[in-house]
Image (cartoon, rainbow, N blue to C red; front, side, top):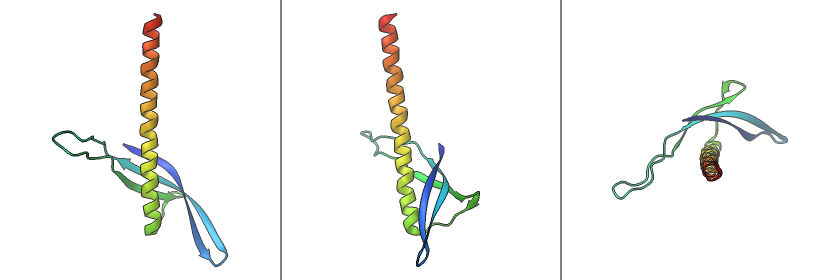
Amino acid sequence: MTYTFTFHVERDCGPFDQREYELEVTYSINRYYPETHLQPAEGGDCEILSVLLDGDEFDLTQDEEDALQIACQQDADERANDAAEYRAEQSRDEIMMEKWA
Protein backbone atom coordinates (compact mmCIF):
# COMPACT_ATOMS: atom_id res chain seq x y z
CA MET A 1 0.00 0.00 0.00
CA THR A 2 1.06 3.57 -0.61
CA TYR A 3 0.80 6.34 1.99
CA THR A 4 1.66 10.03 2.19
CA PHE A 5 2.57 12.14 5.21
CA THR A 6 4.37 15.37 6.09
CA PHE A 7 7.96 15.33 7.33
CA HIS A 8 9.90 18.34 8.64
CA VAL A 9 13.61 18.89 8.01
CA GLU A 10 15.75 21.64 9.53
CA ARG A 11 18.94 22.67 7.76
CA ASP A 12 21.72 25.10 8.58
CA CYS A 13 22.08 27.46 5.63
CA GLY A 14 24.70 29.68 7.18
CA PRO A 15 26.18 30.63 10.53
CA PHE A 16 22.95 32.22 11.79
CA ASP A 17 20.45 30.89 9.27
CA GLN A 18 18.50 27.73 9.97
CA ARG A 19 15.57 26.82 7.73
CA GLU A 20 12.77 24.34 8.21
CA TYR A 21 11.32 22.54 5.21
CA GLU A 22 7.91 20.86 5.18
CA LEU A 23 8.17 17.86 2.87
CA GLU A 24 5.49 15.63 1.41
CA VAL A 25 6.68 12.04 1.65
CA THR A 26 5.12 9.14 -0.21
CA TYR A 27 6.12 5.63 0.75
CA SER A 28 4.95 2.09 0.27
CA ILE A 29 5.00 -0.76 2.70
CA ASN A 30 4.86 -4.40 1.77
CA ARG A 31 2.65 -6.75 3.70
CA TYR A 32 4.03 -8.27 6.89
CA TYR A 33 3.90 -12.04 7.25
CA PRO A 34 4.50 -13.29 10.80
CA GLU A 35 6.86 -16.12 11.59
CA THR A 36 5.55 -19.67 11.17
CA HIS A 37 7.06 -23.02 12.00
CA LEU A 38 8.27 -23.28 8.40
CA GLN A 39 9.31 -19.71 7.55
CA PRO A 40 10.77 -16.70 9.35
CA ALA A 41 8.87 -13.43 9.55
CA GLU A 42 9.14 -11.30 6.44
CA GLY A 43 7.80 -8.10 4.93
CA GLY A 44 6.65 -4.93 6.63
CA ASP A 45 9.46 -2.95 5.00
CA CYS A 46 9.01 0.71 4.03
CA GLU A 47 10.21 2.00 0.68
CA ILE A 48 10.36 5.76 0.17
CA LEU A 49 8.89 6.57 -3.23
CA SER A 50 9.16 10.36 -3.28
CA VAL A 51 10.15 13.34 -1.16
CA LEU A 52 8.68 16.58 -2.46
CA LEU A 53 8.99 20.24 -1.52
CA ASP A 54 6.33 22.34 -3.25
CA GLY A 55 5.94 19.62 -5.88
CA ASP A 56 9.67 19.31 -6.67
CA GLU A 57 12.02 16.50 -5.64
CA PHE A 58 14.02 17.28 -2.51
CA ASP A 59 17.47 15.77 -1.93
CA LEU A 60 18.11 14.49 1.58
CA THR A 61 21.35 13.96 3.44
CA GLN A 62 22.09 10.44 4.71
CA ASP A 63 21.13 11.44 8.28
CA GLU A 64 17.84 12.89 7.01
CA GLU A 65 17.15 9.73 5.01
CA ASP A 66 17.78 7.59 8.09
CA ALA A 67 15.42 9.75 10.17
CA LEU A 68 12.82 9.63 7.40
CA GLN A 69 13.02 5.84 7.21
CA ILE A 70 12.30 5.65 10.95
CA ALA A 71 9.43 8.14 10.57
CA CYS A 72 7.93 6.06 7.73
CA GLN A 73 8.06 2.92 9.85
CA GLN A 74 6.45 4.75 12.79
CA ASP A 75 3.72 6.11 10.51
CA ALA A 76 3.07 2.62 9.14
CA ASP A 77 2.97 1.17 12.67
CA GLU A 78 0.47 3.84 13.78
CA ARG A 79 -1.74 3.12 10.78
CA ALA A 80 -1.64 -0.63 11.52
CA ASN A 81 -2.49 -0.02 15.19
CA ASP A 82 -5.38 2.29 14.24
CA ALA A 83 -6.73 -0.33 11.82
CA ALA A 84 -6.48 -3.09 14.44
CA GLU A 85 -8.23 -0.89 17.01
CA TYR A 86 -10.99 -0.11 14.50
CA ARG A 87 -11.50 -3.83 13.73
CA ALA A 88 -11.65 -4.66 17.45
CA GLU A 89 -14.19 -1.90 18.03
CA GLN A 90 -16.33 -3.14 15.14
CA SER A 91 -16.19 -6.67 16.55
CA ARG A 92 -17.26 -5.46 20.01
CA ASP A 93 -20.13 -3.50 18.47
CA GLU A 94 -21.31 -6.58 16.56
CA ILE A 95 -21.25 -8.68 19.72
CA MET A 96 -23.22 -6.06 21.63
CA MET A 97 -25.80 -5.76 18.85
CA GLU A 98 -26.26 -9.55 18.77
CA LYS A 99 -26.53 -9.67 22.56
CA TRP A 100 -29.26 -7.01 22.70
CA ALA A 101 -31.12 -8.07 19.54
